[in-house]
Length: 419
Image (cartoon, rainbow, N blue to C red; front, top):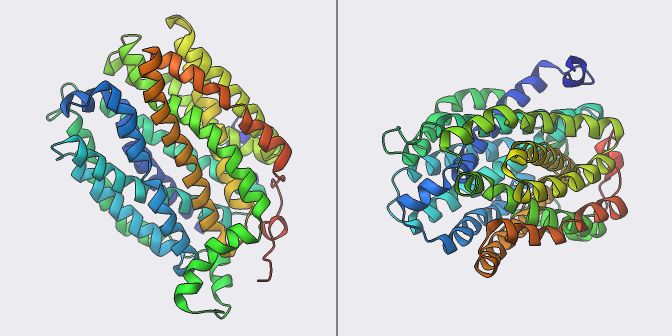
């Protein structure tokens, strides 16, 4: 196991610093995301949000990923480091301010803004890891990045366990989000521009500044159209069903199975250890056996586990939830790898942003449809089970339409094409 968790090839000091800084930022991102899912019943009561409006509110917040695409496009022109530092400052401010909202509209607006910068930071972090690590280490590095994010959910669940005794309740959870500002100096020292971006920028620009900034979007569509279409067709149904199911799982545990906040936290801190293991396992197994093969297995396992979680008797719920977490994290890290590795340096950040936008559209569509189906069936379990019918499209597209990227140099996977 120890050998499995170590990098396949030796990392230098700078690469370790990059993983540490980006992993910490990812941890804080995931803390914020975890709060919304864990404390949804408390937030719903505190802000008087109707049951039928919950899915729409969560969908509106998730749409914050859409404007994040602009930041990832900009990162292909002005650099990864500058945008990373900006996103860290901005999502911290939005998270802390959420503690003071007075209405559902204010809550949705601030969390929408926070999601813009959280999403951009997550996409850029993946790009930096892919560009800074060697071919044999990329999957493992992305797994470590994801595992740090899973620890953020663990921290959120630990704090959530005492939400009923904290001063100001769920608002205190968001107030703690100001902590990353204390780490900003370390982030600035540890993060430098990637060598691949610097090599690309050494070439003279071929157009005006504005046209050069927008060019990555054109390249994503024109240079490798089949790849971006196939990737989108795989990501959308996976997010539609799997991400929606994950968002509702803490609420389902509390309201259907009678879990208290402390019991939910205990589940996250025990069975939830499979989340970081899922990230590392997904990345490492993807390096060993190929991204496509492992991703297909993970997606199929995730659908089966979700169906079990929402339909099996209570005694099976922890096991089904653990399998859901494990397979979901494996899918997440492998989609992130493919979304960055399949495209050249000149628009890799933009392509990563497009993947995230498609995933967000899938999740938003899933959340809105779940609200409609809840009104029809009167049950979140029935609504989500019906949505799983679309999920098998994802592994089918991955298996048939995407090339393998494991253990290949980025320049061999997606060479720059002349314009």
